[in-house]
Image (cartoon, helix red, strand yellow):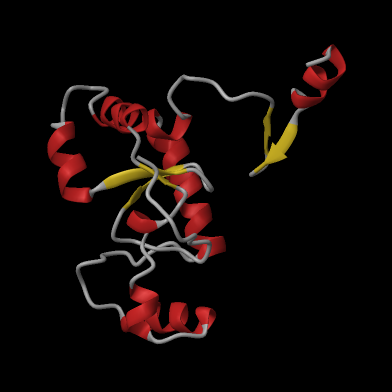
Length: 145
């Protein structure tokens, strides 16, 4: 690769109002910073209808809106969950980062939280998300493992 090609690949790009130049091996900020996570999650709730609030509680209005958006029935809409989205990252590295963030002050048992919530990391919107939830940007083919 020439130095011109290399420098072009490192030009900053704007993504979610953040400048990105390279991929790094460190933990995604939102996996270890609860304020960043909540900011990104709330933005996704507002812009892409991330939800429902409690996936174990019937929320027909939420799923009817998803069905209308996708021009399908409620059962099909309910099958499009974060847990089977191509942007839902449950790779070992990311799950370790999430556990590190849950346990930063040693007050929680990250394994319990991870198992109960079935957490992953949304690579589209940069926040921790629960496998049973969904959003308008769902992409077939996940999760990332």
